[in-house]
Image (cartoon, rainbow, N blue to C red):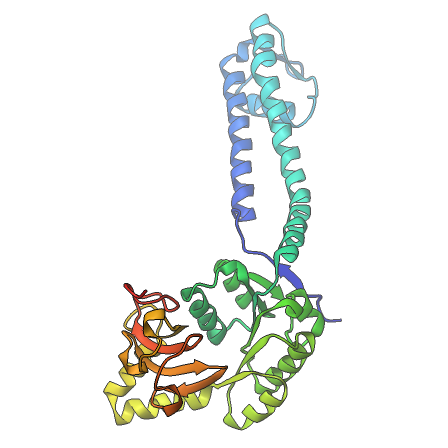
Length: 346
């Protein structure tokens, strides 16, 4: 039977090994304190087993059995000072050690309940999010672009079956569903029915088709973007319900060819595809002072106008004058917020 899908929330606490090591260090420190105290006042104790004074090994033995049990009675304090030290030092440290031991056990048991509570709270908040299926190179790049353009990490959910993908998603502060994205129950754990966008970056095109079919059946309204390797599979993926399809092999091949024909052109295209510096391709609303102007008259370099859901090239005669409600596809500096208006625009 296949493993059940599991929800992994971003890690916010220290690793269990580190936490256990810290508790172990505290326990050893408590033991060392008792050994030191008993050794300094060793003349006030008697060893009933050999009627001799205590050496260092006897002190370690006495401290160990006193901290972990009620003692065996073979080594006991006999004078007033030793008994007073046991009352005001050894006994409180023993109680502290027991609290540490019990606390470690309770924390292990309580962590499962706390994790389940966090998952329940996350499910209540999750809606109109972005669901990314596959967290390989393409999935990570897509998520990075989303976050660079203002999408918070809390609004992104990742589905991936591999341990490496799950670990990377958690390190990036994302909620991750462990499971196969072709299965409906896995998609539903990621609240696919409430997602606003779904990004599919499967390793194989046949898996991408199946994921797209399943995702579209779960959410007919979401905007679904799918990456495929081969151009010949694009029509099939579109028929499966994808709103946009990106062909990775064709895109890479074209970029390689253009870089060979014109290294400068290749450098510009690579700059446009790299987020955070240089040139940036972005979409924004038309500003009031731009209404009535030609696309070429804007502060940003307009390359397309979105009007009524249709994309028009900037030279299209139907968009010679910008209108209210238009959205502009622009090329601008990577230092500017892609969705923001130009400084000074009214």
